[in-house]
Length: 158
Image (cartoon, rainbow, N blue to C red; front, side, top):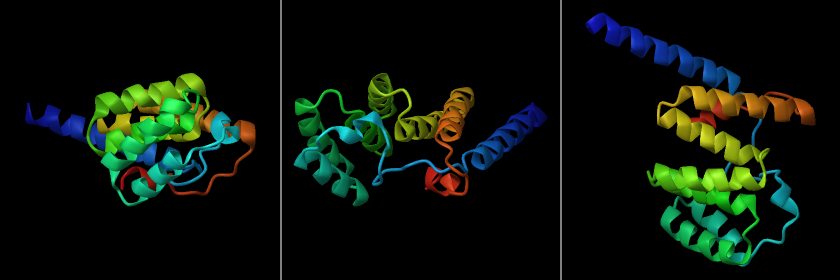
């Protein structure tokens, strides 16, 4: 029984290491341009206030502002991405998942939502789902001819 536990721990570490290596593509993170189809949507002051609060790790206040921004802009994937991010950072994976899904329903190639949803999957031990997101991100990077080099792994595990 002990050796089986060791095997699964070792396998998890190997998979995690592979994901770290593979996630070394440049992807936009909280506080930076999300490069989604939402970038042409006019943003409210609530949205920008929420981004400042996220940088300060004031996630509850950020969620309040994002909800106000969302009330007037239901088709902005960035809002749902940052709602998902904030809920995930607060430990509410159910609401994080719901908001990442909304972001990706609006923009299936939203790099921020794919990345953060992938981080959530890793946190939840859903490595197969994280790999699916990774493949989507790799395809987007190839389509946009974005060179590798950014260290997303550091962002993922902070």
